[in-house]
Length: 564
Image 1 (cartoon, rainbow, N blue to C red):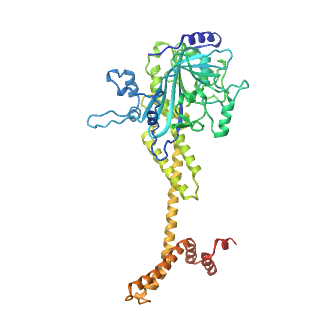
Image 2 (image 1 turned 30 degrees about the horizontal axis):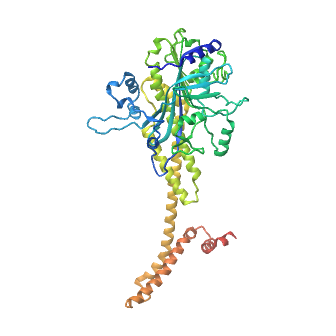
Image 3 (image 1 turned 180 degrees about the horizontal axis):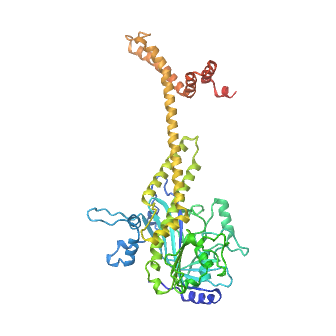
């Protein structure tokens, strides 16, 4: 069942529409925010952050969502079935896990766990345009997606409204999905941000509001932590998770891994989508600022191949201007679906709202999860390198341990989560490939894999180098020891006949030999590097006698003598 928006929103938008053109009969936007989770305990190979949400008394905000497969089979609906069969078997196991099969006795759950908060019912947006008035959007759901063995959480927020001017929709797509401002207007408001965003409870109480205009907060955070902070209403939304680069205390900490522009999906139904101009479609596909319909957001040269790169027109027909159908616009960060609001297209499974909210949402979620995981692993590699001190054995040991952990995580990610395709359904498969292509996920995966391989090879070569040095030193010590062994053992020679002496005398003689021998052996180990260089010079037939003699003298020289 589709919830309805508040009546005042519809009235306000009808008034705005008189001046601002086309009306969008139904608008729905899903915002995703991938975030990197910081380890809770460094000694744990797998961090289960979602378990700490349950054990730390945070259930007043977030409660785990049970999927349709764990309930009463009589409540399992056709749309659930349609969503399930859309994806390949490997994706089905990834999304939904495996049920208890007959004869197996094993219940393999999905590696995804979803938590939802329900205290926020609406969003009130105030736009910078002085002619506009605040618009209220209904909140469909606010979820947190946790992934087993990958320190990534994705916030998903879905909002919707009916009967909005097209310019208002474009403004919402431009301004709402922003974590923090990148600059400030002369009036003091955050650039390209909402003037005010407010979370509202069911009774209309304001739970939190944005603070884009507080420039000092953002400047001081970057100065102090060398990382941007996020707007106050997003901080409230993510509680009890705490921004890592902040002075706030919290067990579950996160850091940003992408820019301030959050990935988003948009669904629009219009009486006649053919009335939209090329500029309108481009703005909807790129979440660009609203402008007159006959203008373009960027130069013609820059947009010359826009249709070929970003439009997916499998269900779009320009031959029927009154009922053109559905057009998808995919630019990686933004996935927009524009549909005819007639019943003929809203009822079609492949272009309807339910498919947008489920199948298309899932493919968008997977694509951005892949990218976030690669960025997280890349960040871990950089952190490991920053901590490495090549001359410090303890630092090298810790570095090796961190790289082994990252390598294990990458291998598990590859075999558990990495998919080239998610479906054999043509439109789902092609939209997933378009999203990945624009995100550059495959290239990012290759770069991370090569970086991990390079570091693993560095560690392997370092181990081999150390083993080689050890073998050289042992060889030198053995060579020196051979001289004494050959001398004392020649023809069974016994230089000191003490075989029949008393035990105390023999023990004394034994210690008299043992102690100097041990001292000579230790001294030989200390000088083994220089001795190996001397032996190398001796074995070189082309080296002059004076060079070999100089190498012999160098064995006994001190560091001060070598410097001077």
